[in-house]
Image (cartoon, rainbow, N blue to C red; front, side):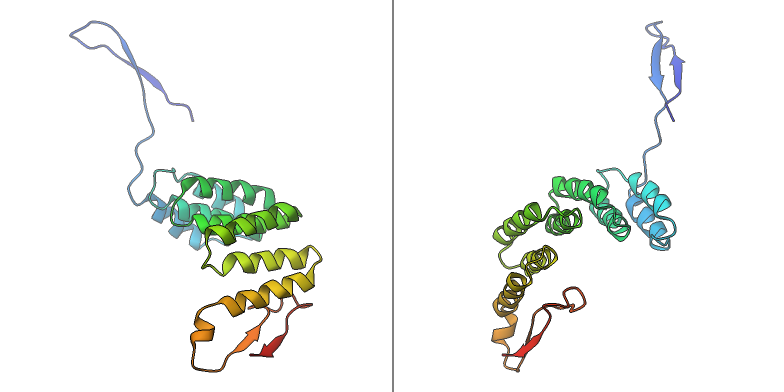
Length: 194
């Protein structure tokens, strides 16, 4: 909807001044209102409605990153990997506290588009950028498994578990697993005792 112009003539100058009616400013809690409204909507039924609502949240809103994450969830649920890739780029540009999640999900979007080389390069970049995180090695293993390299994927999963600092420091016995979700990579999921 385009703004409706209207004319004001200031008495002091006797010159017409053209002003545009602007959309009223949104409330400070607009992002939380939108997130609450979309939480009750089912992404498989009303994805278009959810996306339309989420797009109304301006980047200046304090919950803009969270609305981007919600958009990303809907896009990935619907296998809209190209749209998800664009949303991850928006999230990375925000350079906020969820930047690492947007980088992680970008790897998933690239893998969904079968761009395995780019996904693996981004996973390596994430490993270097966030050395204590288990997310990026895990995603690298998932991408390798999906691209047809299950043996290399298994090695990455095992290294990721062994390198996880809480496990060796524990005084209780633990089991090394290849994946937290064996359904994701059934050809490589196996458990061995440490």
